[in-house]
Length: 110
Image (tube, rainbow, N blue to C red; front, side):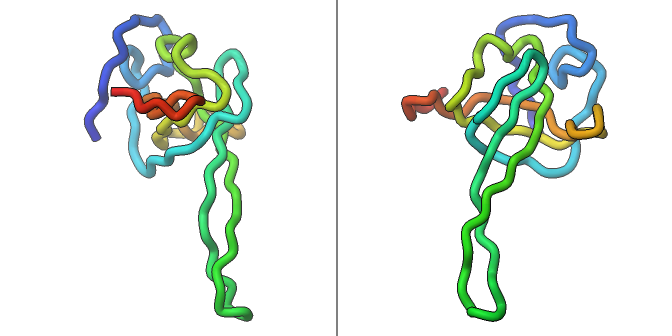
């Protein structure tokens, strides 16, 4: 996976761009619903097949992700971001935010 380094710098050791942590595993895209000083909560929809009714149901998944210092000012609530899996950082955080996809208004980021 190729990383696109943000323009700003940071001294965060858990930053995938400027720190020592490596990314591996799955990537997800979702909407930021909560923002904390060093983490965000994203939510995305997925479809599950219900065998009894032979139909699909829509479910929501929430994931906690580490917010690096270099992306802290760029990402806000309502934005669409991409997160990548890393080693477990804490009890809940196993992902890191790597880039912003859309603004909350729906404008695409280049």
